[in-house]
Amino acid sequence: MTNLVTKGMDVPSTICPLCNDGLESLIHVFGECASVKKIWDLVERWLDVKLSALRFPIDLMEWVEDSSLSVRKKEIVGAIIYVVWWAIWKLRNDTFFLKTRMKHAVLFDDVTYFSFLWYSSRMRKCRVNWLEWLKNPLLFM
Image 1 (cartoon, rainbow, N blue to C red):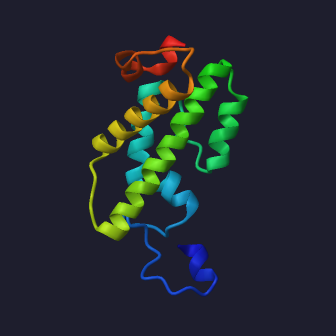
Image 2: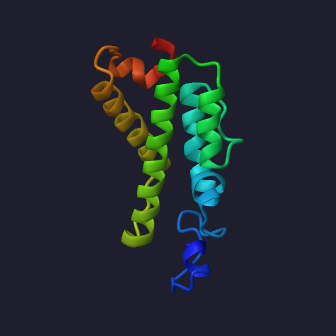
């Protein structure tokens, strides 16, 4: 929203609709927002990796690329990050436009479910079952 304001667009508010505390910007919505940090914490615990110190989206992807993870694990972590971004943006839009609130547990369930769907449809040769995925998909690769 802050970019729209600097370009002269009339917007109702530049405050983050997720936390109502902070200017809505790329860095805030995808990394610094208190509501979003809870989602990243759940993802970190699930995958047993440390991502929360990385605020810029490009930093996350560079971390994945530079990590010592195998190629397959990098693909999984990268895909999960993309799903988290999608889920955050969907949450932001639902909150802003539909005035709905989603619980963090439900949002995390969406992340696990949609990342599993992505992985299982894209990587047909390397199977992992749903229960393994829920535990930690990186343990079974």
